[in-house]
Image 1: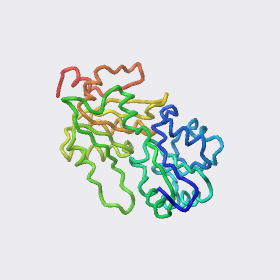
Image 2: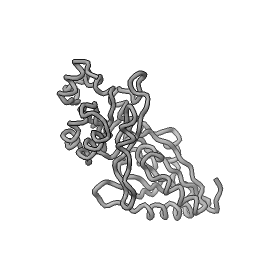
Image 3: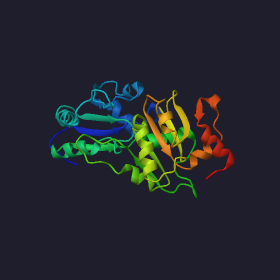
Image 4: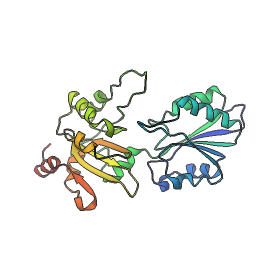
Length: 264
């Protein structure tokens, strides 16, 4: 797109954590960046690719002080008037739960050139961590990606109803609301015995994973403090059968019993 500024803003996906999961395009743009506005959880080795850039933290973390979105929007527009290559570096993929649309709207209103560079989202990294497909023929043919978090002043979300209507799904930014998530999904029609998996720090050496059931989600959810994704679907019952605790994994005994009996 064209605009009066000489600079271009790149909304870049940093992926789920591991620096070598960046796309080649993302790495090349970072290497040439003049300034990088980055999320809180971007890996230091990813930021190091932008060796000559000014680095500005603008991350948002639940329960912690964070940068107002309107301020980020303004900084991006202003930076495009001062620099050739401006990067907004977001965890995962910019277009999924990343408020990219607000930044795009601000850039378009300011007549700023921009480009979106996709990244690997956390649900895909978590599926890879578990060696378990998000979709499986005959088992899970529909998938929903949801978050229970609602911004201040926004209307209530129907995320639970949407997730209850599909075969499988991934819940972002949800471990801190494990009790509410379990209650909402059970009320929406998901059986308490529905298998789930929780993956923390997907793609990183310190990744942790637990197999459980929807009923036991509150108990297991409290064990995770880092960025985590909750996966839900029938495929995680079968996968729990082959998980070994000695490999750093865990499983709810109820899932193991169901897996061993072949319960559906």
